[in-house]
Amino acid sequence: MALLTVKDLTVGYGSQIVAENINFEVKAGDYLCIVGENGSGKSTLMKTLLGLQKPVKGEIIAGEGLRENEIGYLPQQTQVQRDFPASVREVVLSGCQGRGGFRPFYSAEDKKKASENMEKMGITDLAQKCYRELSGGQQQRVLLARALCATRKLLLLDEPVSGLDPKVTAEMYALISELHKEKVTIIMISHDIGTAVNYADHILHVGDNVFFGTRDEYLGSKAGKFFLMMQSRELDNPVMYKSRTTMKVKEDKDNG
Amino acid sequence: MDKLFLYLQYPFVRYAIIVGVLIALCSSLLGVTLVLKRFSYIGDGLSHVAFGAMAIAAVFNLTNNMLIVMPITIVSAVLLLRTGQNAKIKGDAAIAMISVGALAFGYLLMNIFPTSSNISGDVCSTLFGSMSILTLKGAEVWLCVILSVIVVVTFVLFYNRIFAVTFDENFAKATGTRTDLYNLIIAVITAVIIVLAMNLVGSLLISALVIFPALSAMKLFKSFKSVTICSAVLSVICALTGMIVSIVAGTPVGSTIVAADMIVFGICCLIGLVRGVNR
Image (cartoon, rainbow over all chains, first blue to last red):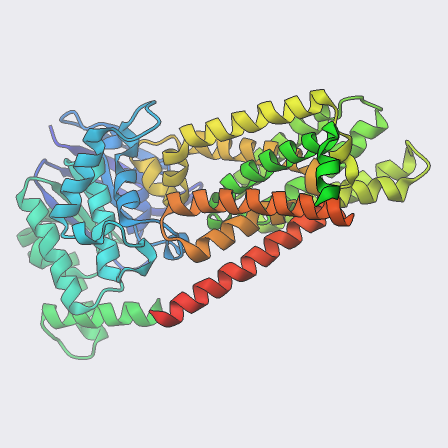
């Protein structure tokens, strides 16, 4: 039994279908990367997986004792968060919220967990700092620590490096890989196929041609070849994955 | 000073000060959340609804108008916070629609079914808060005390959840927090606070009581907890000063309190600026 099995899933808003015929499964310890063009339904799929919206059709089956609130989530930054007065510690602790049941306050165990995760993310010295005054990379680390407080089983990352500079991007990916080595199952959304191929062991391509398989299968598939070709054509000349990563990041910054 | 002590001899002045401090405390608590959730204007919208409801209560000649004002305001609060997520009518448009509608409807009712000969006086006192705070009866004071205690206790009990829901609703929902329930609680508390605060500052000035302390505190502090505590303290200080000044100088209570809030906000802005330059 897989951690998460998705069968004939159609996602969308109401009657408007964004992506359909999605089939895949995630086993414990996998590193799955969901790729696709803008508007192909990556984020909608992620929201559906998180239970933030109902699937239009099909089903998502959780296995291996995975409960609904055991999915950690690294969202894209919202406008509200950019001027939110909150200390790093408060943000990380809020990850423990879902498990508290009816207890109104955080237990000693919750606090210990928050400290451990801050240590792991290397942000212990920032604990009393204000979240909105941190750099983009530091903010992502804070949110990652929060997600780890929510669960150690499955992490969903929504464009974890968007808006980060190349150096911080590399650090972020290294951090995620490290978590993966510690048996945390990772599902990452990215529009950057280069990194997906570099780090993930499974790839789900959403769009007109849905593809799911291992990384090697993907590189040999029609969808994968087409996507790689399109991405290098966008930049006029075929460049290595690495440098394209940086260019993508710059584009994001300009757009955002 | 002597004048102040003389006034404090009267029980109704003491009642007014107790009620005023409690209302200021309650209204500042949720201010931070409402400002951050981009609902600053909701106080304004709801207070207009409360005004409409007040008019209805006046028409039916109810002795205790809380009975009708409170439920109507709570229902509107729930509806307004719901539409925040509804794409059809955007949150701000919904608030504008309901508030203006309720205001017009309330004034219309008051004119068609006049309860006293001085309509404009009635309207003015409901809008800007009159001396009604000085005419509170014992029962009303108790009601206010009980409701304030409920608001504060609820806020403290749900403090961590309110933080989680305000900071990142999607994350909270995905990790199993019942965000709908807490949004509902926030809506209900907001409504209760607004109805309470109508006595103090009147329906046009309530927003000031809700947002000024929060904004001032956000200029000074950087964690959610310290901002919340600071805004509560600032709010209480402003309300006390405002009431004392209004008693001594004979100015309208509501607008004096709001003026005090504005001055404090200005000071906090300056402190924030100076700190920013030094950094």
